[in-house]
Image 1 (tube, rainbow, N blue to C red):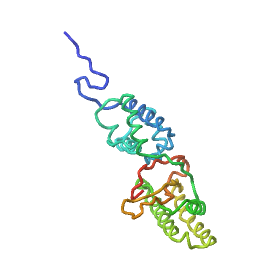
Image 2 (spheres, rainbow, N blue to C red; image 1 turned 90 degrees about the vertical axis):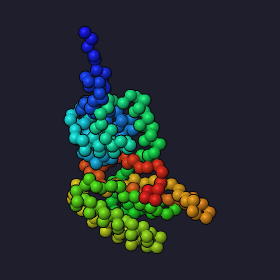
Image 3 (spheres, rainbow, N blue to C red; image 1 turned 180 degrees about the vertical axis):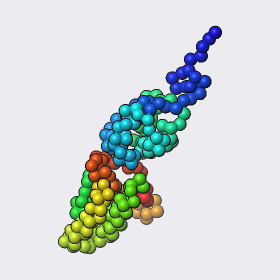
Length: 239
């Protein structure tokens, strides 16, 4: 009598199996370190707590939503990468995932800013300015409202950078700090990342690239703000 032995990535019946928590933890850590990210950076990009990332990497059980959030942060085409019936990827498959991410994204330095610092850094950029507000969908309502107020106010300030006296802009920075204080009261801080680039458009008559500084704004845990933020390499209308 011959006994059939299941392959490592199959059930005893020969079909694909779910990843074990230990395998998921190993894979998450491998992808994270391949990108050069800290646990705090992955937590910020996924909208999860750092301790949640730590538990996952330790091989502890995690929810479907948690694994989907990590897949989203890693920019997988299949957000259910860790949830679907498949075994651990090969080293070659992991390398392809990393190369695809690197082709499509940039990692920018992020910093915690107050009102005056933010406006000064935006003014210091080449050419004209643009702003991109990162998603705050996973934040509490109070933090979402405070962040929305900050973004709206900063956009208003951008419209008058070229004409407003410096003393007036300092006052705007102080006003902005009031909204930042509301964000901090909800447990978050204001972070910014900056990208100096050039924009062009096929519809422009001269097609002359215009220098531009894109400011990426995000709300992060005030206890563990991220050092990096991932953004799309390709600059579209929504940045």
